[in-house]
Image (cartoon, rainbow, N blue to C red; front, side):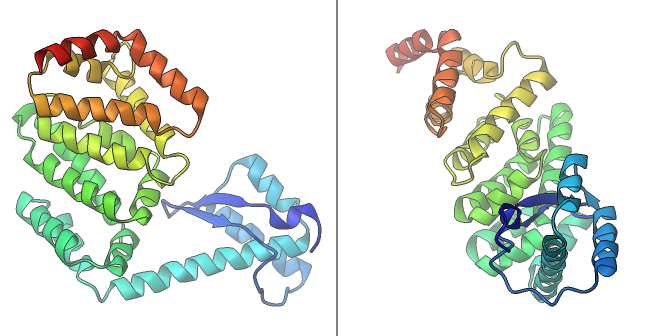
Length: 300
């Protein structure tokens, strides 16, 4: 397999799965013997019918040599088998019990128990099981509901607990960061919790996004910026970073002000692209951030 197409990367999503399946490095693995052309085409059609693939990418796959199509089929089956194996292992762990419990009753007590277990007892394989059972998706759904309820109740306790769980998990393992960033609405759900009325909620949002910005995931920084653009659209701000500027101008909580300044510095400095750093720096300067810093320094 010496042609250039033999190492093409295919990224696609299954209709009944939220995460991406990646087929890459097709020349370096050992594959079963290829069946007839008719069987390969039939299996490929069956797989593509179950996937969410952009038309141009689907055509790219169909245009590959028969040998590459067979390797795509094999890699797809392998990923599904690995998923099933992970779920089997997870079934014997406490993860399933915790997730079933908070699914039935996402009370603060049940969430606190999950938080304590994850922080004090969970091992790497437990985190893998947590993700395999869609634990991250469940937490984001609970967070979304808690944020909507807090608008009426002004009670932010449940948000704080869920954000602290996410904060701890993201800090301790890259697999959680990767899983979160695969979810298109993950960071959008988190940024909507930003609320100056709750310093603890704001601080957790900052800590989560700090971790993502400085992670090894190449898209982490950009996704955080997109989350603030989403917040601008939803809350009809004039510019994406308006909530941060408003906080610096009006809040009296010194710790929250310091955390906000640290987060702004992270957003500016964590981008791997120099042009992007200049662009974000210019946006903050345009908001009179330098003058605001000077006023804050005088008052500290």
